[in-house]
Length: 528
Length: 74
Image 1: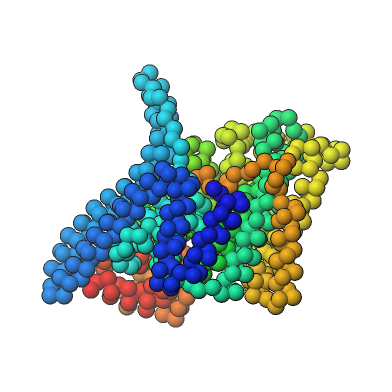
Image 2: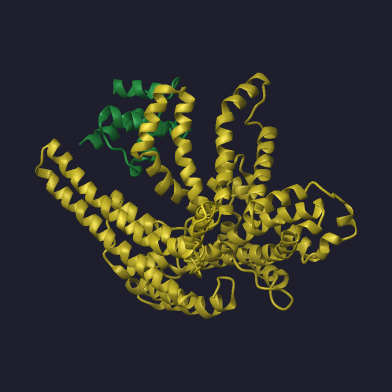
């Protein structure tokens, strides 16, 4: 069952939603719990087993961490400052052992299932150089959502270790937090302190939640079925056979892929957030008009936001504050210029973050390079910043002016488009070949004589994509300026709400790429 | 407080730390500067600053940083 299916809407949500509404307030969370368990089992029985292991690890580690912290809080009251320090060090040592165990157990199924083949490949390559043994490559079927709920569970364990909140005492409630059905396969990666209170609150029906949720669902379906899926056909044809086509077609395909990926991922997130919203639950935002970013760093603060903030809180900060990086920072301050003393430790921590981000997306060198591509761009940007500042001052260029801001957006779009091409291509070499291919055999006749429209995405598809992207652009510009069109529609007067809703529904049913003649297109981000 | 102001001006010269109340929110202290600052503070005051302490409210002003140090020293 995928989120974009009749079974999900009419076989699953249509059953769970009324049950949730009729259930007494205090028991409503149980409907969500039962629904989430059922959803995981329907998706994949093995996923349910992995979820259970992770949930058990998170539950017992969380409880132990809170117990240790509370024991310390009680004991410290009667101690002197030095004794307090000694006890704190002792308790921290125990807590570190617990948090490490919990993290390792939670990560184990992900690491074994996702990365065994990758590490075997590295071993075989190194072993091959010295004429050593070669391991048979083992690959496992990856349960949907494992990369998302694992991070969510680790976040919970680490936050309990940090004392951000007390551990959950009800196992079923923790399972619900980790496996909540609208977010299990593609995120957004939730935080316990924000999501859990909403899950157990027990919301009653409100028009605002229902229409707000329904608007988001149809907006998501519009993005996915009208834009993304139509774009996917030409993208698949050109990326698989790029040597057959000239620059105009290959370049168009790379742009289409960026559009496909964004509308696929953000569209599915809208469908999930809309479903959750109907239940009165607000999921974290995962996108904030990413294509208006003026730098690659800003792009990643607006794209897949919950993954970025997860890496910031649970990788960047811990690495930055670790003893080796702190020592590096102190040594840099002593021996380097102020600027470099700031750059060096951060660069080290960012390297770890981007290596992790790349590997999270997939177990292959391509994804490692995908992460490091962004790391290198950001590092170059940081190192050249003083040069840019001096240059713009000498040339009297206002870097925050409209022209320079526009150019910065265009530069970011180009860099991101290359990153997306790397993401879609089978290997780094293929990405290089596709990017180079954009600049050869440039023939405008590919458009004039319609070759471009014969590659799976025809003229009508292009028109639908163009109109769809224009509508998205208008909505995005307005949101950037502070007007949330979708909320406006959902909460607006009846003569605004219903025509727009009907327009969206008609657009999805009439222009959506589904039914006979259209193949099913998997959600791209569900495959991680 | 005097000692803290001295450290702050070494990490980020040219800022009026006595008056500024939006050091993080206005981008004066970015993540690089905060990491440098944390290294200095941990060293000077023998405190352990953890990721949970790295929120804008704790670093937006010299007074907030001072309060954080006092809290962690307890």
